Image (spheres, rainbow, N blue to C red):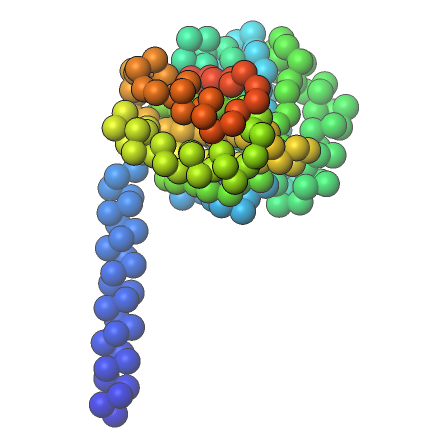
Length: 229
């Protein structure tokens, strides 16, 4: 009986600790996010990017196609708009099944619906596997893509650079490798506002850090803001 009481107390304590931790996380989250928005380690994702003619027209058509995405096992994570060009759209999706997901985006019906929605540029599809992730706490995002010479060497430098990111109030949302080439890196960061991101890009030692980390391509950086749901 004594053992049972001790076990019960420990179980209740653990449950209370988990509930308090989840509650604290929820308080730190902006209203725009829910748990289903989080990009978690181990996820297989695609980042779809294109330009549009009008956001409201595109969004209406996009929402109408939600049932078809659901049947294909495609789960929306974030809809982002360019900070300087709000008609540049990035949508991050998770796949339940890679083949079914790719088939969805190569389906002529998808291209037809995109055209009808006012997509004005050829969409790009970046497929990647998430290795590290974090919980977004702000509405501003930074997407960086580049190629590295040696992943282990680069990852060590990336981890060491975290203290600089913290200094500029930049947090990691998702880090992954492209499926077609694991030396192609996709990094999605989060911040409270775009000013923090701009300061990080312009004033930190990012360029020097990238060079010493063994990046072999010109980094592509995009500042995005969360689309309000």
